[in-house]
Length: 106
Image (cartoon, rainbow, N blue to C red; front, side, top):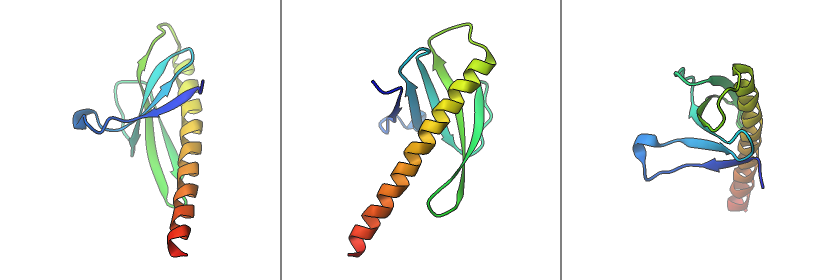
């Protein structure tokens, strides 16, 4: 089983967005918001340089976590791991979009 899964629900516009589900302990749902957003949950800001060399700001925040008693440091570590996984996903997506664009040009 993968550690992380990507989820979204376009049928619920009031809760639209991208979510990372952490499937191993601690099971968690992490909200990914484009831009800098401060909220009441544990959150961290990150920057991704996309394929066009344009910086994208992202905020990852813990929406739900199944284990009580974790420290802020534990939450931050989980967010950092989720960010590394999500950043890899975005790099993979950028690469595949570039390949598709080249195929269209041929």
